[in-house]
Image 1 (spheres, rainbow, N blue to C red):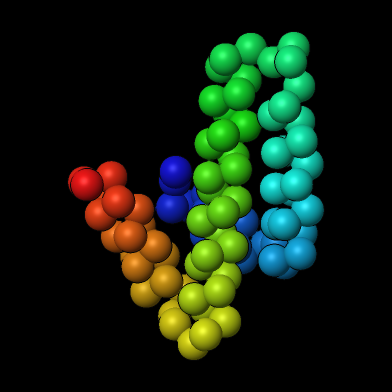
Image 2 (cartoon, helix red, strand yellow):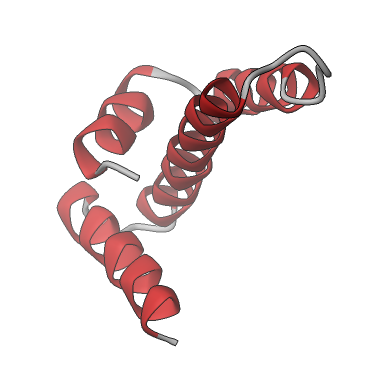
Length: 82
C-alpha cells in the first residue's frame, strides 16, 4: 500500500469509478492463467483502491484529506502490528 497512490486515486476518481475498478480487478484475479507475481500486482492495486475508498469516506464525513490519509495509514499499521 502506498499513500501517494491512494491519494492520487482518491483525488482523481469518484467512489463509483473506484468500485468499478475493484470489481474488474477482483474478477480478473480469478483467472487461472495468472502467475503469482501478476496476482501480487493485482492485490496491491486492490489494496490501494480500497484505501482510496476509505479515504474518500473520511473526507466526505468532514476530515481533511491529509488527516484522512494519515488516519488510514495509522489504521493499516496498527493492524499489521497485531
